[in-house]
Length: 325
Image (cartoon, one colour):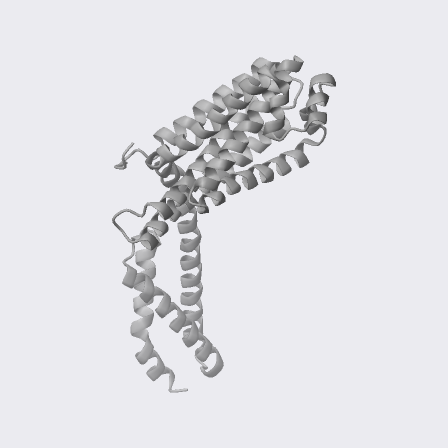
């Protein structure tokens, strides 16, 4: 190793620059530094760590070792604390701004998914209400139809027997349903429309059968508490699938790959944004929906969650919001 004086003279400029960058970082967030400054910070930090290793191995100057050790520890703590803070800021910004903005920017696709599901729900409900055998077209076998009409099972009440386990399983299932609604969009959007139709048919058929049996209001009451959030997320996921599918079919004036990348990014934002919402819906479905409480309380939960959800989706992140409604 060169002499301590020579070693210090050769490297002290870099160490001083590292101190200057750390001082600057103490006064502001990492994202406020220029890109070149961030790269320089990482480069000089790694060099200082190497200098510390050399000094420990070959220098007999404890002051130099202590100085470099203190500098490297300070840099390490500040850099990784800043990285963690940046990650939290990105998550906060995503849910406070990016997700609701993307929802508003792509609402027409969500509306199309909702309309398709609602149309088939109404058709299956009216058809099954007039003729229970119509339910077989929706995939309900005759024995299941007769069981609903004659034995009148309240299958949803069993969920309350193991709320916490059920809530976790329900949330996982709902996330899977949401993912499928999006993934089928890869079939040029037709797959998503089919999936929306199937969900609509299932809902309409079950409601019609239970209403004919005289306890449809109980099923509707069960669905109310969690249904606003859950169904909204399914429609958003369906919209994401349509967004991706139409990018395949109609790339517009830009290359198909670039359009897919843009639309794929927006679709991914919609799906990621739905995950915590589905966790909330799963919790409500596991703990509140099957609970033996007055129906008015469940519909109140539906109203409160609906107002809160759509206030968030329609109003959050509007400061400086320039996207089209």
